[in-house]
Amino acid sequence: QPQLVDSGGELVQAGGSLRLSCAAAGSIFSINAMRWYRQAPGKQRELVAGISNSGSTNYADSVMGRFTISRDNAKNTAYLQMNSLKPEDTAVYYCHGLIAPIGGSLRSYWGQGTQVTVSS
Image (tube, rainbow, N blue to C red; front, top):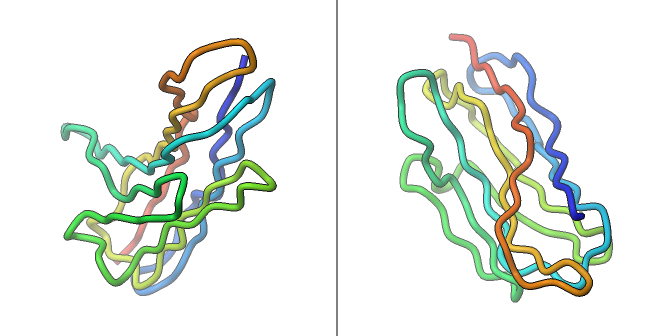
């Protein structure tokens, strides 16, 4: 069964940068879109950025110009480069992928989440 492992979250000061990684592993036939979501306490999970299998990207207005999503298809890995971080970026960040396992159909997979804390 495919798995997504996201990592890279830590405590950082406002104005700093972090890069999150999301590595897909297992018996994978193909990976369609990959996305990053985040969820702060007491708030709904929100879509931060997405990237299609062709490399097309989209971003939430709140991170536009500061965050960049990318993917390395050879490594089955997606990244989220976060620059000019703000305290309001503090959240648990979750990787999401639409993945077809070998012998199976396309379905949704989630990473375990990685905590990003931005201090002011």
